[in-house]
Image 1 (cartoon, rainbow, N blue to C red):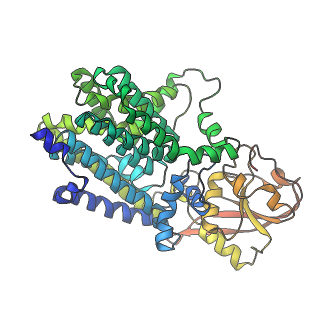
Image 2 (cartoon, rainbow, N blue to C red):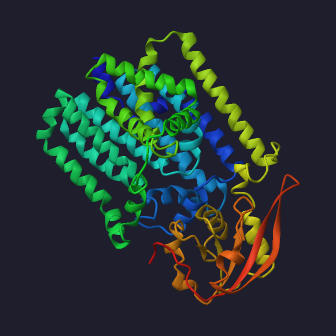
Length: 500
């Protein structure tokens, strides 16, 4: 009877649970307020520029991150940190609802509350996936829908749920190419677990794969029209000669621990180990969804530097398993786990918010990440006030990161280019060299990323003239100066390694 009750649960049952609603509500308010004050992080503004140019693909990512970044602006008409992050905030609510439903279906309501507490206290999930604009906002949603569908196959013994698996896999791939590991994880179940092998005969398995291909097909066609640039960039990151380095390996493990908090990482890994040891068919199908993303990217980190969020989808499955395992814990251990994690995350977030507003830590422009996205609107306003932005003028920088900040602040009113031979990212397509020839450019340099445009670009322009910089203040205190140069008459195309 209990198993039937779990299968018959509805996604909307969470809205009858006052404790769950309290967690969701408090989490939403905190992330909403923090998103107003914390300046844009690395890549966030770049994804905002992607939303200005909707398409089926981009140089470095599939398309859904642009929809995530654009949702708040399309709804509100504003260009703020909150509007940029609003889609990420909403998607995290959806991920939380899915997590609650999955864990309650597998274990109990109490375990489902544990899973919500994990999502709302672990720094990466609550702040990173929960508020910052990254491809993982949408990936988390479709990753969990995929896990839900596999859970339904296990619980109902009906292969028809593979149809939902296929659709969610397609959309997960449109979110981030790492979603291919969902297919690998399912293949692992079908090969390694005898109770799953009978589904090789299910037509729904293959129809689901067809659905996934049809959903993902527009991105394949886009890449075919753009020299397969997105696949070459993403899957080429691991290509090359790399030697095994224990230093890099430990660094990869440590950055994961920093994103999760060390004791939480240990607990999550231990739950996976305990599931392996128990070998219960009701839960062991979750193992590859945890082990493959965590294991593969951690091992890759032994040969090259990895980004800390690459293995994180695997920890979603680990949270599911841990939430069930915690049902056997004593109350003091449970309280210590969530209180310690929540307090640390809250303190860190409060420090970040206060520092973003006041700059009280006095880190300096080279060390202060909150200055990465600070002052760009003032630069555009100052250029407009000086009447330097004429109809024939374009803006440019020498890094795609600062190009993203500049492009988001420019709000598509002015062309923005990135003059970087190897890493112009999608600016190579948004502002192709042919469209800039014969025009004046204003080079904008963030003081954290210094270069000499006179030396770097003199052969491409007729003349390069320094302009008065734009001084930036925060909370009444001077922080930095953006340096500017007027680069007259682009006479020669700057060579990029890719583009139209």
